Length: 168
Image 1 (spheres, rainbow, N blue to C red):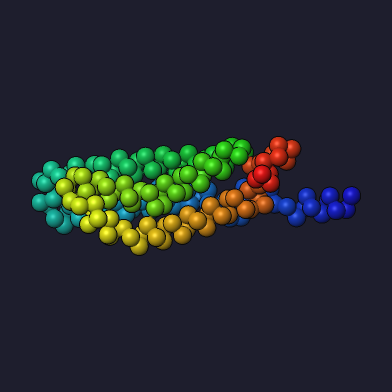
Image 2: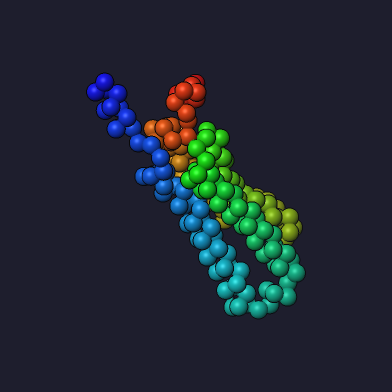
């Protein structure tokens, strides 16, 4: 009996710790910092160089990037909310997918959009994103490992009686 009590006390469950940090990063930090970065990239630069607003290609690219950002925010908020409120195994899979989408995949989409809109070679438009893609892939791998291996995540999102807890 003492073993059962001890194991239930030592096994974390619920939203807290690193899981809470991930939820805050998905639902708050990523959208806010993304907006800040796009504001400086598009609004501040247009004020410094008013001729950009007359360039239809630039305006089209800016619009596409803002749409990508809005979609990214929707997925981040959905994943953050799901991790916070919906305690099912599919929530963990959703979070992993969103982490990888927002991390290394969105820069690839930005590069593809720039390549298509500005009629440039994709190899040229992807170069500025190499470091960002590599760094975000490492972060995504760490968060994926956490979501797949954490006892808190297993105790929170995988029902004890379903056999899914062990991942087998």
